[in-house]
Length: 210
Image 1 (cartoon, one colour):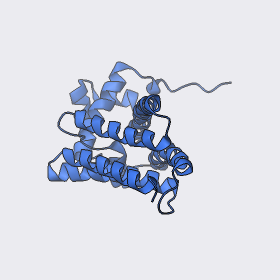
Image 2 (cartoon, rainbow, N blue to C red):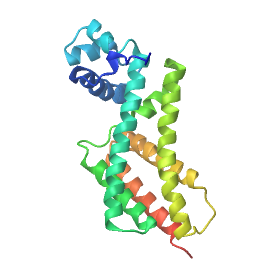
Image 3 (tube, one colour):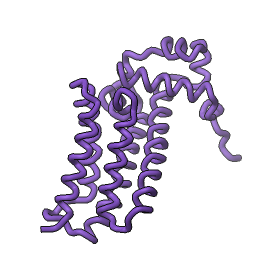
Image 4 (spheres, rainbow, N blue to C red):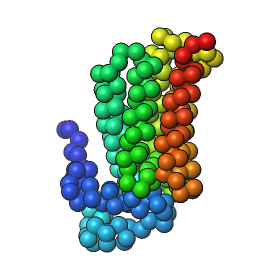
């Protein structure tokens, strides 16, 4: 017999509200300092109502990570499509994509607060193997997505120095995550934007030939 889907995984308005409230709190305070009680109170449901949708904080963490994968995928699909409509050259497409990413961060009110993946990584002692695997998968999705772009760029524009496409993808991810930390620590949301634009210039120089 086919497996029956867990009804708690259905995208109901209450479940989506729990995820939104939890993400905002966790990015600010971390998983450890965010309680089920405060999430339930903010959503205006009981503890039992929370546990109907998520049987524990591991389940909540997995759902938040999967949500992040979907949302980032949708954002990247959109900016990739826009860049592809404008130009055929893979390097110019990547430069446009990075510009569009910076514009997204500019548009976030008060600056981009942080990333649920970073929060899960910093406090991975709290989680089971499934959460850790989901977090790793999220980072690998980002790597493979941008590795493909850098592979195409290297064919059309051999880099000045030998670089691995996967390492370039990881650098971009690390720069964005680090930019979020700097922006928050320095109280300057524009730090993240400037770092993305600086990375754009580095990519341009590296692949623009001698």
